[in-house]
Length: 160
Image (cartoon, rainbow, N blue to C red; front, side, top):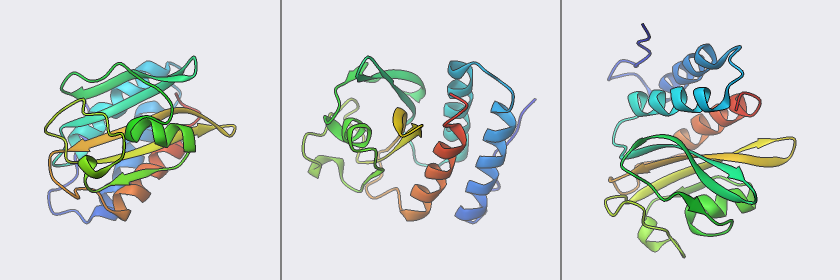
């Protein structure tokens, strides 16, 4: 049985340290990328409050394709450069968006989403996937969240 959830009053940097440790334990030695993404999506869902979506889009044939996630049904395919995920994938840069409705070309897969954090997973200088976190809370994500999820992406680069 796994119970990796941090204490409710845990400071954010410590919660992300625990998240990375849990992700490492869950994915260590497991060669199946889908299994690893599924467990990490569930881990993110458990660890992070105020989310309505947590998961992955995989780069397949030049576009992002829906991967394992927790949350409501989502867009299946996203072209590079379109929406928050597509921009993160095409630029290879994290997108921390306080208000998705002000983001040019935002793709509204879920109308309740108000803020988003998308972090590319890069292996050998190529974006192989993105981690996508959505929240109904405006400005839900900050630089500590960005740093924590970027550390997770670095860990997963050779595990998915």
